[in-house]
Image 1 (tube, rainbow, N blue to C red):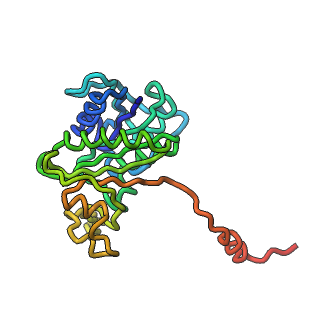
Image 2: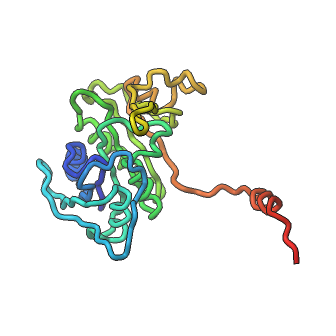
Image 3: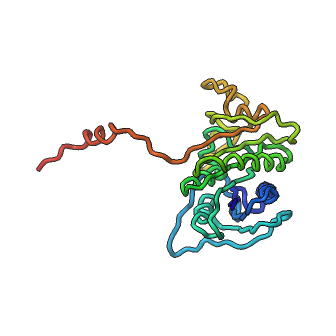
Length: 262
């Protein structure tokens, strides 16, 4: 398949090279286009786009990666996906693979993930997307996540176009992996945020692992956060923006409008 590989950690982050190399080795036609700098937490943001501005990009070489054209782009992951789906980097990709992110993307916090945002943006163009993240650690076992990404992509290829899969992999050797599980989104991810007062504003403090997940709403056994922390790789199918029919909303709002005369 023709694949676009992107990420939110930046084009020179080690995870994207390992991911692209694994996909090339599996026989896919890979083009890499990723942010020139770190865009973590970008979600599906594209930033301000103006007709008189140019999105800069250049060809780069990634160490250890042969058989793929690579681009460094001054843009967010979502904007890169949009550009690719419009033919900016050659033939339109059949699928988008985003990652490997350094750190898990689990729970409802995936809303803010640039890694996941890229995959969801692909779905808006009818292109399936796979987001790949690796649990944190002192050193990263990129090859474990890359191996699972290749297998996950093979499954996703048989699903309807526009499908999105979020893959989270424990930071361990393949032999230490307990297995792969379907998982629903937890209420919380593996990182917690809190806000404290600071001189002149506020400071956001990020906490450690969510070991207490499962004590809320019965989420102990089958959520992505809980299963990942237990040593399983998790797969969660995601749906992007879609409308829900609420036929009573328009009538209720109209009834609250001031009475019109004449």
